[in-house]
Length: 98
Image (cartoon, rainbow, N blue to C red; front, side, top):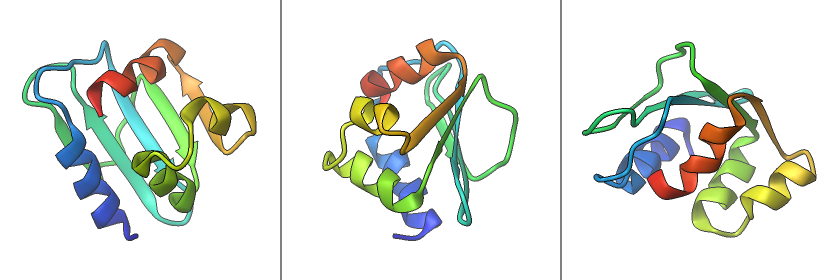
């Protein structure tokens, strides 16, 4: 799946009534970034490489599996497939937002 497709998937998954206490940047090595700001409604999703409160680094294929439910976020973190920098609390809130 391309970066554009993954970005569109996040955009379509964004729940209209859920907010985050900060911003999240997904870094997909060799692909690009997806920036999520759901601090206010409506939330925004872009490919802007901006500073975020929480940065999650994950390979594109693992990110796709995570979004489809084939990969559990906790397991991905525990096995090193997903790395979190910054505010871990915001990373925990993602389940309610997407």
